[in-house]
Image (cartoon, rainbow, N blue to C red):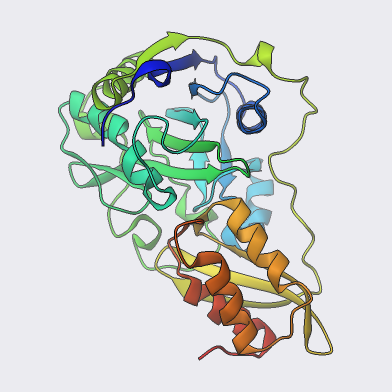
Length: 348
């Protein structure tokens, strides 16, 4: 694997002033869509953002009532938003730094099959943490670790046309994790963070790491790992006017048959509608990370299909055999099992 060369060496960078999570997610989603559709230059972008208020950012596939205590969030006036990437609930708030790396395709800097996106594109962040004198590692799931603690969270999305978003949330003065009493599903200590504690860089280093310092370390790490040259650029003037949209609209799931199963990352759920042993609709929810075209293809294949174990297994194979689509933190077998539990057609 060689670093980028030629036109692929440019990285457009922007540092935004502190904003709400909703504002950040709106611009991130708009830029990903524009990059995927080709309505902006198909170059790499890196957006740095901080927050002026507290919120909880759900993963793309999480059912709110299953992931967090929604009533308690309302009581404490903590807004709940949804990321365009998968994974567990993450704290967006003061003391954290959000880094959005947007690429026109997965191999823009390194030869990168879709399942290796987080592996390949965590390397610049690891170099940034090492620049702070930390023993940093990416161990294969969705965490950035340093000196034995999780200091950051990674997630991703691959759009329909192949554009890639890698999201990173780093705890600078405060951890990126959501308060334990706001998490809905019971879990053993450390379950959601892979058994390691979550700590801020300030706590680890016993000194303040400013936003400006961390951004400089990230840019230096990207230079060293990918051979790119950051260039200041603001994407907002290039985007169509904002429609004040939320990244992903929640579909009401009241009245659906439902099942939930524990997996390595947390849990997976299936919400289904049946008519005379035919699946009319199936929706997968949970803490897993996946490209949305893959989940969308799977749900479309299941709609109108006979509700049998054989059909469920065949649909899983058609979508997840090979490397076209990515599923992390859960396996296709887990989706088959939870769908079987919801429908009564348990796969073998």
